[in-house]
Image 1 (cartoon, rainbow, N blue to C red):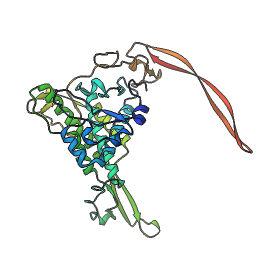
Image 2 (cartoon, rainbow, N blue to C red):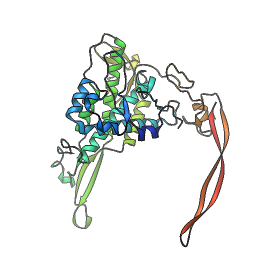
Image 3 (tube, rainbow, N blue to C red):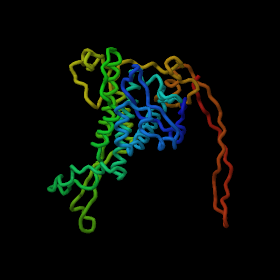
Image 4 (spheres, one colour):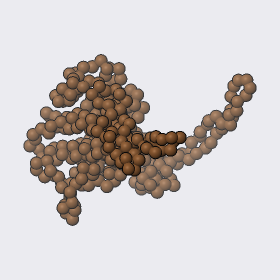
Length: 356
């Protein structure tokens, strides 16, 4: 993946990127919470962090959840870049506090995915922390044990992940109360982003798995104890990518309500699981510094692929350059008594294609 701005390693190891911010700040702009180097984070007090008033209050009352906010942001950004690494928009990040730049406020399908994956990341991180015993106010979901289907030989038990708490915290931290606004476009964008954040939370719930353990003489599995667990975040990301592919364009109405733009489908309600967007996406083919679009020039492509990573699609018909890359590595390694490893030096020549 060719990425601009902060690379994955920088995001993963060097920076703490805070999850998401005030829906409408006092100056009417949209922004991400700032970032600070690892190590400074633990020393900062909630009052000095770039949070809204309600987020600072939540932070003060629950400071032990802040590491989960950090982990949720890391999960969301990493998975976004994984899901889109072969496409024209590759979820590239920037070195300024907007992190995603233009896409955070464009109202496009890409904006929808960003909000959904980041909200899902926070749910996932907090829920995992609960199940790991890192919290005093949450642990396992205690509502299931004692129920099940004894006639079929199974019952709920074990330690089911407490997704309800993770979802609750994600809503409280991200979806601050909507402020009164007289700007209709901002009102619609707020509604869109809150809907997509909720769709991200629903994705974590929809992808939950059921694990079971057998009990009985000699492993006969006469009775099974089952519990619910959240799936690996890669599965959540793939689920949301499918929602992205089938996302629904909407038109804004007053009182923070939206409806489908296609007249033939306006009678169909918009479900919580669907991603919605207001504006069509640019083609991402050419660089547009005003919009923060990096374009695909110089991106590596696959000459034989018919998918989005293929040179024809990724390069937008502009053609591609071919370079011969020399790769040297150790090979045919053998252990020699005693005591070292002897290897040959293997060299290969491969073609690499990049967009014009």
